[in-house]
Length: 475
Image (cartoon, rainbow, N blue to C red; front, side, top):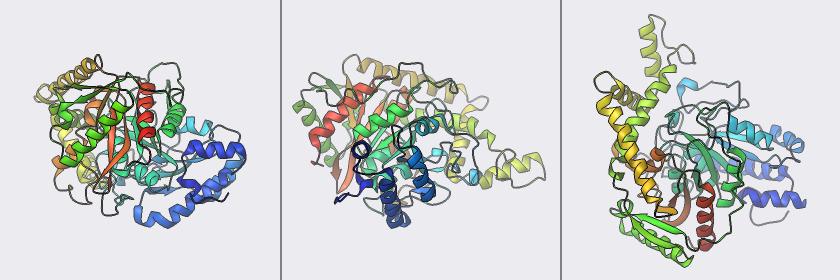
């Protein structure tokens, strides 16, 4: 097929249509992907491991009659895969080979997808820049001197650099949405419980969710169709009828009430405020009503999130003790083995969060820190419940700024944490949120975040698609 645009630059729904018409073969897509990886990966460093091209070429013929036709997907390297190692970008799991696929991986394989490679991340998904990987940082395809965001930075960079046609990420406090914003792609955090966490290496179990990272909103809905649904292997997954999230795409949003929380825009830079004003105008032109609202407990979201997530990380990472996984430093005594193994196996950010969490859960401090954080989390959830009695969708920037420079915030954890200030509240509330490309600041992508009430992904995607179509080519 002769085209100025390589196949790896096309969204998946277009590729599937071309395959259906017989104009291209899945092998053509795979060839273009590996060509792009050969050209760009040395600079981007999106992948920790890649599947052999020959294996994917051979398998795509067998999978050609399934819905996804053997097309490949990049997968964040904290999601279990039997075909490729799952390292979590940590020395602890550097050689860990799972014996089972995560539920989402099995669902994708059943639908005819193949695993292209495992994407880089901040170690154990703890970070906002993918600089905390134990192996190497990933770079932003729009500016190699800047971060791609985190912790799903490898997945975002792979899609943005067209080294993947779509990808899976995981989102605990913004780890899908913030890198999607920084890299200029679409990223969705589903409602907590909509997508199985079975096979996702746990960071913070009451917050973690797997979600799509794609070139456009239709691909996002298509990928969510593949991975959503109740899973008996995950007690937190919810029994709900399976929806087709592509069904409402293209329907108008006239009459939608779009809320703009004042706490999210009060301290934005002039350029960021101008972006928000343009987004508001677009929604008005689409027939939506704009409603100013307040989410009064927003200022407490970051400390609440880091207390809860670090406490849960402290409990979840206790299994990495030098006994059951690969890094073992000493057998002089049990205590020495634990201490030395964890010291050598964990990077500084993981150690910082484990220590915060262990302190917050310790005797005499549990109620003052973890217990109080859980009560504030309930207030943040109530803020959203009240807001969704007034509006259908909430609008905000995904992050206060575009991508920052590599190394710029490594020595200032608080500045790093604040890059997630607009994504963390929806995570604490367990509700769905999407980031989509919606403009630029100084030539760098700047993302729009839309938030909906729990299990309202169809409404969220409908609004996102309407905005995307109205602004296509304008960014």
